Amino acid sequence: MSVLSRVTGRLRTWRPATPPLPDHLEGILREDDPEWFARELAIAAAPPWPVWLFLLRRFSWLVDLFGRVEITGEIPEELRRGPLLLAANHVGDFDPFLVAVALHRLGVVPRIMATGGIMAAPVAGPLLERAGGIRVERGTQVARHAVRVTEVALVHGGHVVAYPEGRVGLDPDGWPERGRTGMARLALGVRVPVIPVSQWGAQEVLQYGNDWGKLRTLARSLVRRPVLRLHVGPPVFMEDLEVGRVGDANRARIRIAAAITRGLVPLRAAARPLHPDPTRPTTGAAAFPGGVVPEDIP
Image (cartoon, rainbow, N blue to C red; front, side, top):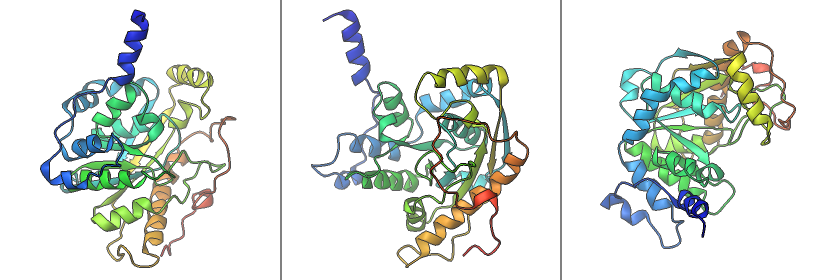
């Protein structure tokens, strides 16, 4: 075996040390659980990884290389001390970096929900997992594991970032889709504040399609430096809703989509027209077309 092959093999299997699993979580595990489930439970219950904190503190300027970051809104200190669900619209592959950096500048340590494909990638996947990333395997038998890990993270005071749409939004005009009810059920079940996070501009840094165009748009953003805007709104009002009551999960997801859309309207008003991306499908439907949110949301 060549040296290159050995190095490549080690990189594929490498992962940072995992904190020990607390005794009170041992009972959650089952024999048929995927091998990563115990690791993610242990990480969710542990304090933020010092390496992740170091990267956020010392290297967040890297995001500023690709655009001019503008952050509006705030997260009150009393909310930052406890568990939070942060619901963000998903405009492109670069926006998780913008969201992580912006939220850290606002005083929280984000744990980002990510697709299983990203989490399975060599090096980057293990680093994201150890930083508190939560694996989401939608449409599979292990999809429920993400809910359990998120619950543990929230019970232990974590700040979890989720994308209610479940994917990069595909509305032709770029407005947020209605999304799924999973996050709404989670919020109602654990009873934690849901903070809407609206952001715009990151779609210009990386195109949607996975080809060499990604490098081209990344390099172009170094020169053009688009404005990367992010706004954090007040918590979504859901005190009148109950988990398990018919229709309440749907009402919760509509309110979350409405709050994100309202926060997005001024960001887009201050931006250039929607940057064309021929690689992005336009098969989605906005929750509130044109960003028009009625006053009488149920």
